[in-house]
Image (tube, rainbow, N blue to C red):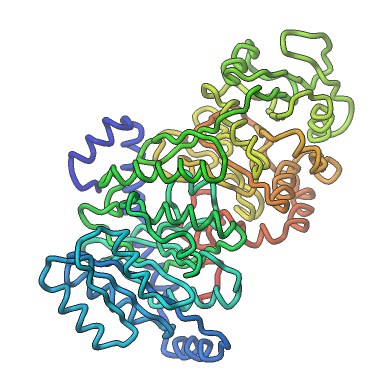
Length: 576
């Protein structure tokens, strides 16, 4: 499962036994899923002659058929792999394409005659031969000079496109003509050319992008956008695509970035490639963190980028001076005896106050009591929020029993960003996951992925390892700016007295372009109430029907019947 003992020892030294075990668990899961994925491919990607005729007829009826350019830098590629890459473009169902190839002064003797032969064979193939080796960014920029299409698709010289890749790209352009960037799902090709390890991605997820390049392949840019960015930068060779994505997305804006939930790209996993093992090119990950840091500078969001385990990335945001006052609101007396010391450590250097919703009276250090009076859980939270003096609110369930060091300060750093609404940590209880952010439509209602699973070992799922945007987080522990909370009208306690007001608030904030953020390396121990109010759930479904039909942060190729994020043999998308 790992390519060498050296790789295993490297992971063990860098990240410890827990992460190594998590990675092994993940690889074992990929292996076990192979038969199911092969069945998924057979049932969802095979096209009959009649379906192919329908597709071609549909394409013929389009008033606009954008020219799509496929950009491919080449250097000393294995002859068979290069042929497969080129033939995967020539096999496209959508015919209006050009393949723009730049050979980066290859020394392998088969490269030039093969490319020249293909250029003679198909007039849609353009080739330029560079006079010197300049590496991948220089070669990509040379290929970009050949591009005349409205959109540009990036293809590595040893990978393959699905036959429907450019059809779905063109379809997206026709349906959403303002699109500037788009990306698809992907899988890997093993040494024998067999497909495995599908990556079913969320829709545009800017916080996940700061943790890893989840977009990866297939990536498509409006050609004018990629040129406006200045193309590829050689100082980022190895992570040049990541750097380009940041710069392009800054110009494009999130609403014009589209996700195609289809496996349209096949990434070859061979020895020496990142597809084979993420630690194969450590320099690329260092450059990735440099790309993140430069992005944060350009968008004026001060933060520090560090390596997280498994070559993932972690951003810690700088807090302003003076630091804001934090109001921690407990719905009832929390379960730990020495709360003030524990909270002090979690807040680190931040000033804070503690409001306990309880019929008790009196004052203690940092602690005041709020009369619960009448009403449900969320009305109590609203009442306490109105009494809070802080600029940051942190709602915490009464079952709170502690958290990881500095968890409050970490969440506050995210909550202070202008484009952020609510922020939540990983909530655990007795070593098991209670909440890792909510998915709408999961198990027929609102549920958290991996709920009930053991927290240990880490590293087995990206969902549990990277900061990301989600549709909602739990009021069992939620951090939000008081100004944002007040402007939104707080929790809708009349419609959702005990359950789902936290989900509703997050979705209302999303409508105002304020993202919800799940931060898994901030971990809190609590046992908040389960969501079990059928009447409130129906109100939530009517109010936010689009999210229940398709949660943008959950892929339609994954099952909704359970919380395990497994492949669904019946995706919630039409075949084409």
